[in-house]
Length: 121
Image (cartoon, rainbow, N blue to C red; front, top):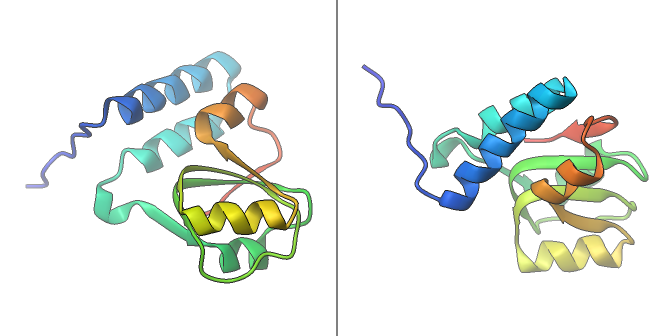
């Protein structure tokens, strides 16, 4: 039998509830997908390197990472990255390339419909 995962971080629990509520209000399935990815066990949480963002994202695109952004690699495109967590060096690299770092709740307020967002994991 599979053990059910229970998150204990109250901020994360609140974010997941907010994402599900916004998904129902705005009829935007992207937020329900992000909420389900955030509910995963810590072992399955997404960790994305800057090199992957550089490889797969286009210029001036919004990338959402339901996990942590790590600093391995270089970024030569101006992209907006929304994530649950960032390493300090990844924030420096994104800002130096002309991009922006946002939290998931900030991108949820900025773009409630979730249009033109690429999910990377």
